[in-house]
Every structure is written in structure tokens, then in C-alpha cells.
Figure (tube, rainbow, N blue to C red):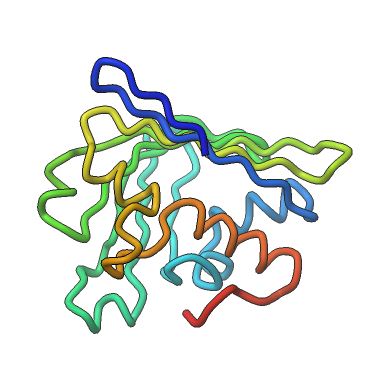
Length: 167
């Protein structure tokens, strides 16, 4: 992860190489039949056009522990399948994180000789709590491993057909 902080602006950049086609990675990010297999296991809903809605639904396990039906919401800014997706992203699982508002999330998918490169850039301006959560800084408190864990799990699912842990 690369983190840049200057005058209250925080940007996290994660890069992972995956033995999968750009289309397979795009589908894993944008299709619920894939999204429920990795990360926190919830379905995603995308209207893949500028201004379209984005929702990440909480998994059954998250809802059983008091989580809301919608874990994350946002809006699509740009969609260029299967290469680039830019959207807003707001965490709804906790009132203090929800109050931090919308952040900007960009997925870039590029074929390389070493495999397909997935770069995730999350601009977390004015969202220090979310920045800590997504960096994995609250993993010891049971809040998960953030983007590094989600992307590792995505890679595992696409390359081996199996997730890192139970969903």
C-alpha cells in the first residue's frame, strides 16, 4: 500500500497482480455472484453508467450481528469495462464512519506480461476513521483487514476458486 498525506488529504493505493483476464476481474468487482465469494461476502449492485447507483449489501453474518442491510453506498462516476471504474464510496456500517461522507474509489485493470494488474486507489479526504479501517488498522478489534485483505481474497478466488476464509 502507498499512502500519501498532505494537508488532510489521504490516498491509499493498492496494487495486485492476478492470473485472470481483465473481464474476469471486472466481473468479480461488479457482479454479485462474484462479490459474495470474497471479502466480506455481500452482494454488490451497480448501475454502470455515470450517475448510476452503487450499493454493497451486508452479508447475512453482518446483518445477524446488527449490521444494516446496505453496508456501503455510492454513485458511479465513470465506467469503462473492463478497464476502469470510478465511483463514490460511503461506509454505512457505523454512524461515525457514515458521517465522514463520500470518498472516491478508482479501480484500474491493466493486462501486463506478469498478469493482470489491478490498482485500487481510494481517496479518503476528510475520512480519518475510514482510512484507519480500510488500511487494516482495526483488524485486532475484529473489523477486518481492509483493502489489503479484500484484494488478497479476490486474488485467491479468481486464481484458485477458493476464498481465504469462510464467508
